[in-house]
Length: 400
Image (cartoon, rainbow, N blue to C red; front, side, top):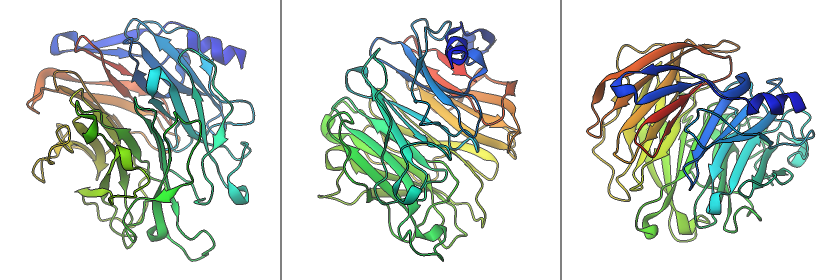
């Protein structure tokens, strides 16, 4: 364990730069760790969550960089020995959110021997939090009744003390004939920085289902007018077990209990399919609160603005595909800088126990690809992906 922590603390090396005025800088995740998740705190520092160890039950570490990813400081371990995390399947990787006063919030799927367990001895959704620069508190299980966690979960937090844990699981856990159409999207929310979590409740439309081993994302928008803040949840449905379309849910941030209004629901992309494709997705917000989603459909990756800081969604069909023919593109991620430019990245050729390449494209604020802003590099490890980060100077770092 000490060796793993020390390995994470070594300097990260920028292995390449890519066009567009060297505005996209590649950085290897320190120590060869997997599944990078990054948030940028109020000081402009990068906070990196990554996974090390056996993919069936390993450990999570957080490290901070004050120089845009050139070096990272000493790592903090997130999980205790009894709360191991799963990396197998890629979509099951841990999630990181930044909350009030730069607090950190981490959620992960517990391994087969992780403690504490969910009810009935089921797989837990483990959650731990830490104040800025402090040690993480012991992990807690967020699931009180909706057991059946497989691929999809996330954690989101905002500057007002709200924390949201979301996952999908069957509504009727005692029904042996239940299939993916019986899965619902569940939310366990907190308004005290994660100190306490309310019991989960379903937030999606019944009968849409959820693709059992597909990932999901959640993020609070942060518009200038706090009254427009929303919690966005992006997931893949399993309607009739043959319609695995991308859906987005939007809930008013001050009504996470759903007492006043049902969530707004958007269908983003159709994908007729009868089997789980183990896909993942991404959400990003700019400083105006505009929300951008990225996802995979039929081997190609897309991104689209879901709203413009609380205003109406752009016209349907506004999704943009990554340049070139896509037939083996997976795990898209997107970052947005203050100027409204987007960096979209994805993996190519990755699969079960198989690594691949990382590719990317920089887009201008007008949504058009930036000349010289594309690239591709080999070396994504099995079970991993890339993570784009927008820096304060408008440039981007791409970790892999």
